[in-house]
Amino acid sequence: MAAERIRDERNRKSTQRFNLVIGVVMVIALIVAAYRAIPPPRFTIATGPVGGSYYDNAKAYQATLKQEGITVILHPVPNSLDIPALVNDRKSGVDVGFVAQPLSSQTYPDTLSLGAIEQQPLFIFVSKTLGAADTPDILRGHRLVMPPERSASSEAALSVLARYDVTPANTTIAFMPIAQAVAALRHGQFDAGFFMLDPQDGFIAALGRDPALRLMSLRDALTLSRLDPALHPIVLPHGVFDLSPENPPADVRMLAATINVVARKDVPQTIIYLLLQAMGEAHRGSSLINGAGAFPNLVDLALPPSPLALNYQKNGLPWAYQNLPRWMASLVNSYLIIGLTFVVLIELWSSLRYFMELCDFLFVHFWLGVLKRIETRARTGKELRPGDLKLVALAESALLKTDRRRRSEELIGRIRSARQ
Image (cartoon, rainbow, N blue to C red; front, top):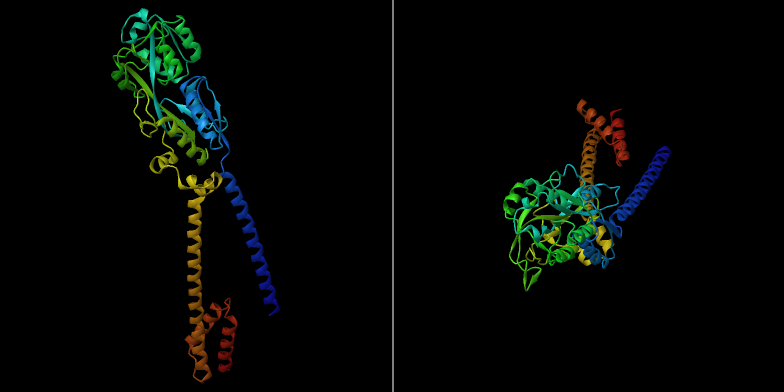
């Protein structure tokens, strides 16, 4: 008996130690989960060059998110084609960026699209001394300027020019920062300039009102868009720069690229939801080439859409972010499904435990019933059969480790005493 009490006491202390370890591990896990769910108060956007449309869009997001207590760091990138690689690289310090070209999810596996935000036309401003031609082949042999070579503007411009055999081999093509390129074109240092910018950008307005320049209307815009699916044919309405006198004097056929906001997959969901909200405020209105409500959208995407963007488009801002403090909303939205799953598992475990207790109860009472019947026969002097002795041995083995062991030992003792 003493040995049994010592063994039971050891088992109890061992169980207490195990429960304590499990409790400590769970508390640590909860603290780590809470820390990971609460987003940092800042993130970085790769914007493209200062003065460009990407930079202006990022400044708009920055102003909106500042009201939510989020600091947006603007990281200008002269070569905008480098932005996707920066976003995809966890070590770059860049979390979000803008792209104007289709991307491969195999090349950028850790980056997703948050949505298309606008179309940016490829503006071709030409010196009026070159005449009124509407195809870029008139530019062959002249002096052309455009933004840095690894930019969306230059990539699109060079692609279009190559269709007309206008190449660096037969034409002077210079690359320089946007502000410098615009100034050089307006001072007559170049015969034409290519700029992919928002129609309402200040540089475009200045070039559009320059009396020495005209905006080329691309006769072959539809055909070029078929040859390069990344570019779409659009029409810039006449008079967008000035209505009296009309400037431009007629509708201008152009090519445009769809701009996407992309983010790395590990950016906290709170940041993503607040950024999606800022994107909606900045881009849902009408523009010179699009009607109200056309953007943001998840139609013309550079990469697969973020699940959070899909959820936001379908349901809007989650309830938690609308009604709870941001830190609490982060916890609820991050771990609600996990919490519900945990509760369901606990309920299933409880139900299973009760079921096992019921099975144990029935098991014990079955064997006790068998022993009672055999004990009654032995006590009344009836001869026990060989099968009865086998049942006694099975019952003794089955009840050895149950809480009814002592009762079974009493019955078995009486049976054996009656046989003697």
